[in-house]
Length: 290
Image (cartoon, rainbow, N blue to C red; front, side, top):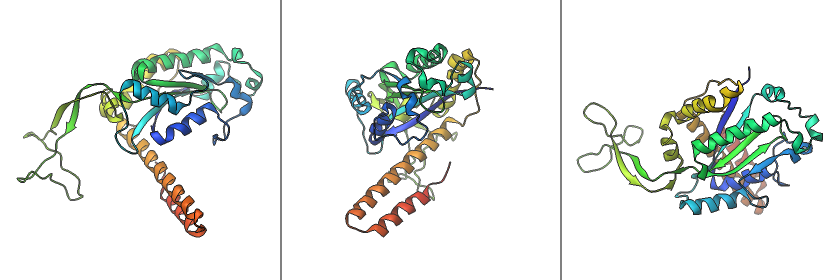
């Protein structure tokens, strides 16, 4: 049984350059041990000129759309990864050993069509104007496609949280210090809707596509529009909220590790080798699988 696969990866502004270098297979930037350089000549890209970096394209598209990051560590780009079970590609004619001697025209046509159909669907679902790069990799274990896009929310009404306040107008907090949400007489959470311009905002972007159920709804739609047509199954997934929290955890963990490595580098500059080693070991020990 083969499955169609679609995943979403959030990326901060600081990570865009690394993602682009990995997609482009630029020398000195490859940390992926699965890459087989004998098949890298088969990789294909779209939306970007050969000499354009992903960061430059992202920056230009943000300027065209009139948006920019509003805080440090913000998710400024997302990457949709499309692939399928290895058996599916083998049925379409994929042979990773034989592919070492292929030219681009030797790639089975159905593999290209699968990715083309997925890319066309993603353009409609995510917004064609938001997509900045498409890359198909055939030099790893399983063929897959990266679709990079800017999560831009359209102008319009934006839902804003409302918090309970005391008689002096101060926000009420629970025993853990969390702000208490305001509720109506029937116990329903109260929201305020305000006018908002076009903005770079991942939460609002997915709110427009189903809110807490956005990830599940996207998977349902992808299955109906792409996977089902190719005889692929749809696997079980976590709820949209669980997916978002997992990805946020990964982003926070990566950011902490970067800070630790930067601090360790500074320590090394002053010759404090033992302290630097302890700092790096401590940060790595804090990571927990999710």
